[in-house]
Each structure stands twice: as C-alpha cells, then as structure tokens.
Length: 244
Image (tube, rainbow, N blue to C red; front, side, top):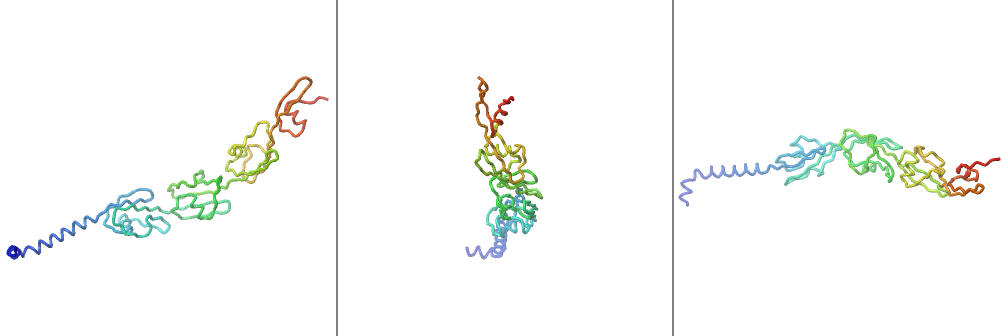
C-alpha cells in the first residue's frame, strides 16, 4: 500500500482537491430551495439559496413598506421550504357619523379597522364598502382605495297599546323595521306614522291594535275590528253612519 501511495503521490493531492471541489459544488447546488412567496394574494415560487426571509424577498425584488404586513414577521432564518406572505398596505377612508379618518394600512378585516379607531359596532350597525353593505368579519378585497362607512343602527321608540319598548334597526323605513322585528301590523290597526316613513334619526311611534266590536242595528248584528277610541270611531270603521 505504501509503495502504491509513493508511486502515485503526485496524483493524490490533485485528485483530493478535485473531489473536495466537487463535493462543495454539490453542496452548493443542494442548498437551492424552493419557497412560496404570497404577494397580494398571488403565490410565487422562488428558487434561492437564501437562508433568511430578506434573501427570499430580495430574490424577487420585493420591497416591504413600513405599513405592509409580512408573515412571518422579522428577518427570520429559514432552513427548509417556507411560505412567506406580503400583504401590501393601501388607502382606506373611514367615515363615521362624527369623523373621517384616512389610513394607509394592510388590515383587510373591516371590524378590526373600526375597532382600531375605538368605534364600537353593535349588532344592527351597518358597514358599507364603496356604498355596498358588507359583513364586517369577511376580509376586504385588494382594491387600491376603499371607502368604509359606519352607519349606526337607528333607535325606534315604540308604544303598543300603552306598553313601551325601544329597538334598533338598520332598515330604511318604519314598515321594514317593524317587519324585521316581527312586529305585525294589521290593516285595522292604527299607527301614528306612515309605514313608509324613513328612519333617519330617533323615531317615536304608537300603535293601537284593532279590537273586536259588536254592533246591533235593529234586529241586525254586525261584528268588526276597530282601533278607534270612541263609539263614533268604531261605527265609522264598521261603515255605520248615524242618522238624525
């Protein structure tokens, strides 16, 4: 063996160097990994030897702004295939009954946006995005600009046959609000306001339920419903007029 090593000594070192170089080249190419970069909802496959999040972003020439959202946060080390999400910020104008606030944010859930402004949302309050009502817990689309309007529910102070109650509604008219609250109004009932009255502020309404009345005229008996407060009203509702 020693004779063989001495005989081929001049080839051993070059061969060892070549093997080491080949090993390093294999290791270098083996370091290439494929990561998934989700940019504004669009997945991008990135092949890179980067070991940090910043290296993957740099490979795709992606610059993360101060208001953009990066997941995972920070410049973390990555040793295996990773999924990196970048949600760019955009302009949002939030209009409340008291104020208008313009934000540059990457937040996409409307409820979180208004909560960050200390605006309380109650069950019947409405959120409008570009004029259309939306579910405040469903993420918004990625439009360049959004107008988000907060429309609080309106109170309706209702008295039915002397018993008072207050409810809040997001309906545009009194009739729609009563229907949404399962408050039925019969044709013979008396309502202090027209059912088409728009609800654009604090509204007070009274309802008198119609009652059954019996009217005897000579030998004839009539039964009817009336919400009237007097005998005359009851007779008028029944279509009976007094003569002389």
